[in-house]
Length: 240
Image (cartoon, rainbow, N blue to C red):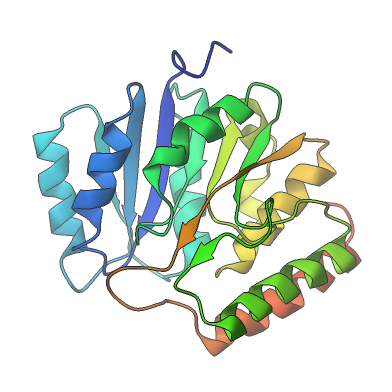
């Protein structure tokens, strides 16, 4: 793989009701040479898919749009998007949120980390707690969740639940995406667990996470329950 400045990178970005945030996100991603973006829209009723199509027309060759149908969920969107990404020539494949909580300015740092690691996490907890606009209860829940996940699964990263990640192509290709069962945010833990099982080198770079600027959080009670159960399911299941 070449230097971070020469590799071809594809950012996979699931969307659901992010029409106001998407143009800002796209502008930030495309500011970096060699970066393209795949928008995976989950049937957004607010017209996000149409906004994505317009942006793709304005930036031919640098933006793709996937319009999903059927059951919704972050995990399902990512499985479809990552599977498509593996069909491209991208050497690095990124995951990031569309709500601007993940700053595209960190993309080159994650790419640099992939020189020595197979998976690089944009970590909120590598240098203390680096979050903005979170109430104390949210910080407590997030830090507790990461400790809980590390205890149950044996994973070692400080931020197992971060959705800002960079994969080397070969490392992602070793993940059996058709066997990933988690539909919500627990998908992030499952992918990391499977990467560790496969012997992937997992690294972290520090980021500052900023709570979403527009719209509403997608976290529901069902998502939280799945997140609590998934570490035990992964620990107790037979190695797939």
